[in-house]
Amino acid sequence: METESPGFGQNTKINQRPGGLRRLSLAMIATDRTAEGFTGLSDGAGGPGAVLAAFKAAAPYLGLPPRVVHAVDWLFRFTQRQDWEPGARPVVWPSATVQQADLDLGVSQTKALNRLLVELGLVVMRDSPNGKRYGRRDRSGRIIEAYGFDLSPLGVRLEEFRAVAEKGRAEREAVRQLRRRITVARKAIEQIVETAIEVGLEPGGFVREAEEARRLCRRLGKEERSDVLAFGVTRLEDRHGELRQRLESLIIQRRGGAQKDVETDPKGPENRPHQYKYKPNLNPEQDTVSGIEKSSPTPVRSVAAVGKPGLRDGSSGPQTGRGEQKPARQDDGTVLRITPDELVRLAPRLRPYLGRSSPAWPDIVEAADWLRHDLGVSKPLWGEACLAMGREQAAIALAIVSARPAGHFRSTPGGYFHGMVARARAGELNLGKSIWGLRAQGRSSGPEKAAPRHCGPEGLSIPQIST
Image (cartoon, rainbow, N blue to C red; front, side, top):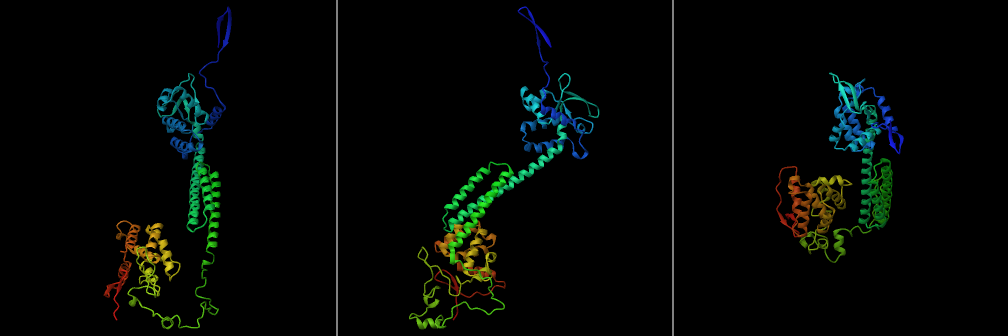
């Protein structure tokens, strides 16, 4: 357009560009070409709801901001199913005023958002000759004429959106699994450090490795890519394997010859003569009662003579902190007049943790240490029980708790065991009575007449032996 404006007696012509036209960019041209490929949705593709769902599922993995997703969701309010059929065009024409009010945007923000939708390849702007948005439908609801937002690019990219969403979900699941492996490896390394401290090894090197693992975990916590996390997980798991091998080798070296060899052939060879591993004794009577009486100036005293069960010299075992004495293991392999085999029969929950069918008391103590996890008994409480009662009696007490039914406890089995430890410290615990109760409960036949009993010096109910 040319205009004339007088100035100092001369006529000046000024060229002005017409206003109100939309400026095109390469991204907008590419979106327009994408829209030209729309031929309608197939019967199996679904309607506009399927297109919107696929777009919203893929939006997080495409890096689209929430305002773009919200705007596309809002535009789909104005489209109908027949607009996506072959031969039709999904165009919507909400006015700028309605868009600004519904999206709570200003004039400049609305224009910037519409341009962003086009440059992202989501919509195409169909402009009318007068620059306004409007449209008309026939009686069947099909669009006759429309100017506004053309949603065809979204329909063309339907399969792309579905593939992106599927790949994104797989990536997210891979990241979740890798983060879980990171946590497992970190805790395993910390457990190795605690084990090294418990067995008395020098923890310095293990602590440094654990600190480096924690720093690596903090760095990996900010990563979202599965390939980076996979590299970090491999490093953590390799470090855990190295620390575990180092710990095992140090423990074996520390134990040295104290570690007993495992008997791989307990029944002996089938086709070879039996080999006696004990040392022959030239004086077979020295280990008998008569031999001891002949060689010892002090006669061997029986349990009845000393008045309490105990060792051969009359003592009853190790001293407790309260000046009392705890019954020690008898010569016949019993503790509190019960054998390991009988204890396993009375408390069958010990059996899964035993390594052999005929256990000794060290096997019972080790099995009880494993069983305490099922009963909710903490490691500090187990240590207190071993100090208060002795390891074998603590194992017996734990076995008694395991044999009780669930309704026997007011709170938990661990709390019940805590009360037993407290009574043992106060000198009020009577395990012998509990053992006899288990025996009576475990009898498969009818009730038998119990022999008269008297109370021993340790508070243990002992059957009265008739002479």
